[in-house]
Length: 408
Image 1 (cartoon, rainbow, N blue to C red):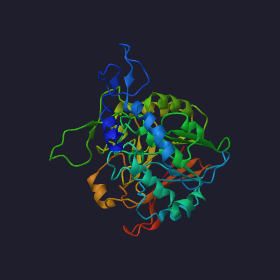
Image 2 (spheres, rainbow, N blue to C red; image 1 turned 90 degrees about the vertical axis):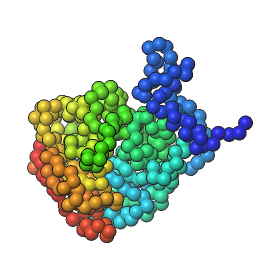
Image 3 (tube, one colour; image 1 turned 90 degrees about the horizontal axis):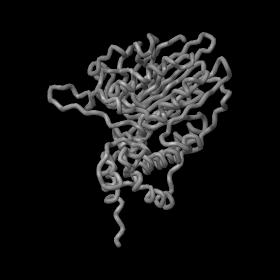
Image 4 (cartoon, rainbow, N blue to C red; image 1 turned 45 degrees about the vertical axis):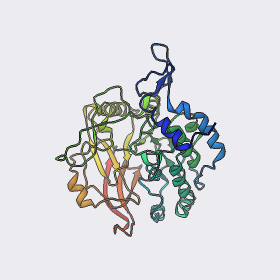
């Protein structure tokens, strides 16, 4: 019998994503879970059908691996944490030396770390994603940076493999294998679905917890709005009132609650997409408002500590702040940094296009990276966006664009 082509097999599997089949062929809703339906039928997902294929494919292809990274001792007192998002693997990456020149203790790569979905034709092998990672593996600037600066990583949609993708992405398991192989994920991360991770650094009194969320693997499909010519083009999504929809999934929510109960002096919570803002209709926590309220309640109930949230995704950045009943009146802070080398517009145009009473700064669109500097004696952290040094947009290397100091 003739073998089923990769593209045809992938297309057939993708057709099952939104409507997984029960054993008798009847369709079921799109939630992912290893449970049995009330009538005794067992759901079957595209992922189940693809498992054998991926087991064989993994034996036949060499998955790319990132350049070696220096480690960071758990007892290290962190004072400078750099981060960034939206790196196109085919564009200049001189910014790595700019970031290294600021001598960060740790760099957080928080999503869209490559654009492996561009040019993808739907094949189940995620060829363009693997090719994007292979380009990164051979990038000398990244190799030099990783040899000098420890890194923690999470993903967003473009390095997950599908624009705006969530739990219904049929090839998410293979995307996770590619990601975990490339970045050398820890045994803890490899042992469970998704790529969320938390690490603690520093002695008592100077203990920093870094929490890297996964806002892709478990996230429900977002609700789209009707397109109208008179609506400003600020995204396709609208807030959902469906309390069955999830951003993190049950297991990750339970894990996050446990992590926030651990003693720490300062917590840095990373979400690849923005948390606080309500000013646009692209992907954000605003699209699932009940999930954002749940996050705020969980943060308010954390073991006592300072807190700052980091995000990316938007190809622009700024400093955000809000206080809500869910946060029990506590003012929460968010620093968005994007993009490292893939800017779309200018600060002037984007600031005018997206007014936001929760954003305290201009909407910085020139290429940038973020920095959180901790003053342990003063019990303050300083959030800053710095120019990534792009020749194309004229932003100075290391130029401070916005900054804010917060006490806790």
